[in-house]
Image 1 (cartoon, rainbow, N blue to C red):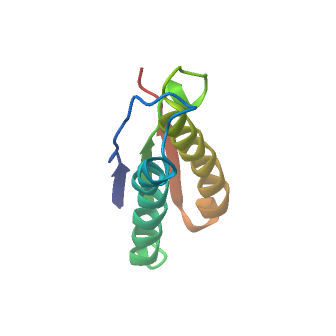
Image 2 (cartoon, one colour; image 1 turned 90 degrees about the horizontal axis):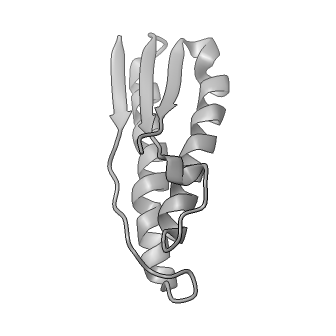
Length: 102
């Protein structure tokens, strides 16, 4: 069985009113795009064999945190992506879960 842990991440401490769109987008690229692309790569490489993915989320993705608009929204997306991947890939024998440290 092959496995993957999606744990790459970054954080910034910008106020919501002040965050630059480029910074917001860059943080989302790391958390959201990275999780999607690595997960897709694993599933494609499995070629029908079972596998497991663990996505590292955060309690910030479940509750509001001041000065963490980019991070919180990215982690909320990771949690939602995890649920979608889990139901979509279960029939292929791929187990997808998330942990929420913090």
